[in-house]
Amino acid sequence: MRPENQSHMSEFLLLGLPIQPGQQSMFFTLFLGVYLTTVLGNLLILLLIRLGARLHTPMYFFLSHLALTDVSFSSVTVPKMLINMQTQDQSIPYAECIAQMYFFLLFGCIDNLLLVVMAYDRYMAICHPLHYTTIMREELCMFLLAGSWFLSCVIALSHTILLVQLSFCADNIIPHFFCDLAALLKLSCSDTSVNELVIFTAGAAVVILSLSGILVSYGLIGASILRVPSTKGICKALSTCGSHLSVVSLFYGTIMALYFSTSSGKSKDKDMIASLRYTLVTPMLNPFIYSLRNRDMKLALGFLFKSNNLLVK
Image 1 (cartoon, helix red, strand yellow):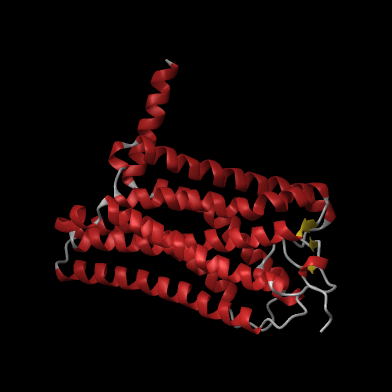
Image 2: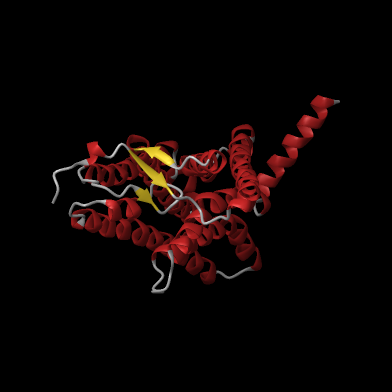
């Protein structure tokens, strides 16, 4: 192995999305519009929860942090991608690349864990309604949120520390629109077996255990409803859980399509398109799902517009 280390790699080059030069302006406008919709939509969710007295509950406490995480998750990669499309400058400094990868892993992991916490919250609300307020106290909510942040920081930091120990000798071209961990490992001229083992174990633990927790929570919810079947109970459960289930399906469906596909003919372009879906499209759709399928959110939204109309008059 040559003695060079990461200090000799001052920058990387991001190839970006496979877009024809003549279509750059059109896709730039499209992605900018989607990103602004993501930011404004999730900030609106935060505003509604902040102003709506009926929304000061554990469910909406976690939803507000999910909205904040979605904004942060998109902001880690999309602005840099848009700048590169506009300036045609594909370079990214080494330190900035490592930081981008760290925060991408951090917010992606928090997003994942918050969905599990929200599933547990719905389980307590439906299966133990009489004890819900005493169990889901502010202290427990803060503990679950802090635990999600702590675990996410540990996972993201472990990947980052292992990565900066590697050597990058010559090739600095990343065939992606952001500093993806897997793409960076392929550029290294060091032994990456430990990195790959940590990716496999940590990734499997977070995704599989989180998804299992969500499935168990909704399995218990379904069993509770079936024990005393009623139209009112089913409608209440759908109203309470429908938005969260839609977000879970969108989030995990996209991840599975990217990481658990066994198709041997999958190209790098398809990888980037799938990555674009969960970094840009999924965070944009979450506010619409919660706003359109949630009665309390629609009432808060109507009250906000009504208040604005009164102020204008």
